[in-house]
Length: 244
Image (tube, rainbow, N blue to C red; front, side, top):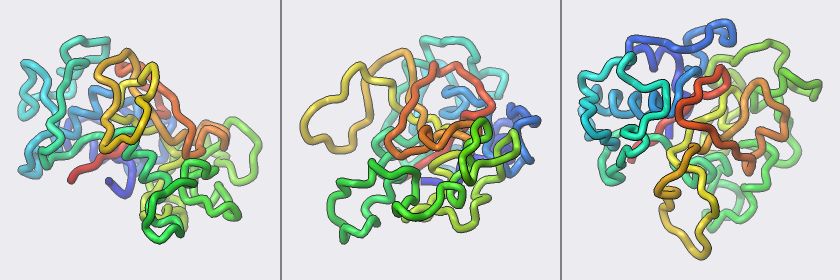
C-alpha cells in the first residue's frame, strides 16, 4: 500500500491534468482531489503501464495506454461500472475495503504478537494508542472546534504530520482526504469466515474511508465508513493505491 495518498503532482504525471480545487489545497504535494472513482482506477492502470506492470483493471473498449483525462467519464457510465479486476496481476489498484481497514488498524503490528487483530477496528484514528492525540496524526476538523484540528480551509501536503504514521508506517489513513476503495457498497455483508474479500458484485455506490480535513474526529475513526456514487468529485475525496 502506498505510504501516502496519491498527490496532485503524481496524478498529473500520469494523466497530464490536475483536477484538484487549488483553493482547497496547499500545493501539488497535497493529495489529489476532485477525482471520481473512474479517475482513480484509470490512474492505477496508467501507473502500471508506465512501470511495465500488468494492469489490474479492464473496461470494455477502453485502451488505457492511450486514454486521456478527457476520456474518463464524469457522468454515470454502465461500461465503466462493469470494470473487471484480475487480482493476480502485478499492477496497481485501489485497496479493497477490507485491505484498507486492515492497514488502518495497523494490523498485525498492534501488540498482539502477529496474531489476529481483534481490537484495531475500535481505534479513534489510525495510529491511536488510546493516549496519543489525533491532531498529531490526522489533518481534520476544520468545520469544528476540537483540540488539534486544522485551522486552514484546505488539505495539507501528504505526510505533513511528521510523527503521525500508524504502526505500519502509513500516513493520513485518517484525515486529509477521504480515500476511494474498490468495493461497491453492499446491502449486507456476508457472514462467516472470509479470506481476501473483494466486496459485492454490483451496486450503485463505492466505499470511501478515512475522513477528511473538513470532518469532525468522529469521521476519522478506523471503523467509520461512507459511500459515494462513482461519479462524485469533491475537494475532500482522493485515494491511495496498492500492489502485490
